[in-house]
Amino acid sequence: MAQRNPPFRAEHLGSLLRPAKLLKTRTAFDSKEATQKQLTAVEDDAVKEIVDVQLEVGLHGISDGEYRRGVFWGTFFQELEGMTEIHNPPLSIYRAYVPDIAGFVEKGGPGQSCICIGKIKHTCKSTLVDQFNYVKSLLPEERWGDIKLTVVSPVWYHLRYKQGEAYPPEVYSSEEAYFDDIVTAYKVELDILYSAGVRNIQIDDPNFAYFCSDKMIEGWEQDKSNTRTLGQLLDLYIATYNKCIAAHKDKMHFGLHICRGNFRGSRHFSEGGYDRIATKLFRDLDVSTFYLEYDTPRAGSFKPLLHLPANKNVILGVITSKFPELEDKAEMVERVHAAADVIAKGQSTSREDALKRVGVSPQCGFASHEEGNALGWDDMKKKLGLVKEVAEAIWPGEP
Image (cartoon, rainbow, N blue to C red; front, side, top):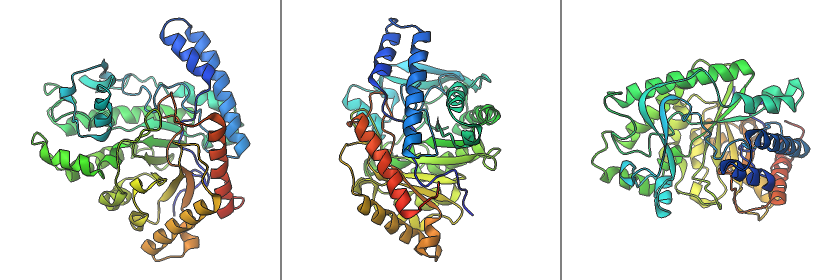
């Protein structure tokens, strides 16, 4: 049986539009014109406001909007021993055909990244605990387990780098050895978060969608420096994930969010349905829930959902977070039903049974980067409200 509550029938993907005052204060802080105390006070007020918005809409998986981060992946890797933040590195270290890197190169290259320079080790201090604890302070204790904490993928700073550039060869003799230390650090992070009361984790990883991109596949095959096929790399990534969450997956809810990029100004990076990865990913990755982008044809058809196992959920991102135009509620209900029919066919069951493992959401966050997408505050609230309305139409009264 698939795990429930979390996930919930009406979900969002974590990041939400920042208020103008928060953006202004962070800019002032970055230029040393505001203190940490001043920034924290503004962040606290903004988080309280966005938590109230989510409660008003009737959502259960409450987040802090990622308001204390500049980008969705946060600073987990930057805080590890053996990892360091780099600025404006030479483009020669990157695989230029990886979709997000290709997009950044168009604008002069990634301004910031993070790379291994030594043995990787957790410092035993989490940068996420304070974010979680503040949201806890705003909710009754019976809601603490609902709080959604979004975390970075354990393989985030690997795909972008050319073979041999992700770590020094004198430190790690193989990719397996490199990932083994990341796994150990990730486990420490999860231990800390679990002790703090975190029970609902969403891992964000656009990289999996890149395995479905024709341009990425062509670039990989032409790059003779690669020592693995893309299929072998996918196996390595899935194995790394499973090792990371093995000790916690039976006592915490883990979901994986996959999208095709959500850069400032509503920019996406890749296209291609889930067909190439669905069987392996849905079957072998040990998460309970898949949060999948499905708001445009670039995500492909629902056909890959034929391979969703009976013990896993899917949250269908059929409502776009990129643009203000509001979708038609009846059409969204039809879309969810169409997806449920595919799931039912794959498991030889009924639509009603399939719907027990389905929820609805926007396709991505509203501000994966703090500048946010090309829509306004009221537009975002209407989108969140529509998510709840669609869920109520399909699963009346269910959280």
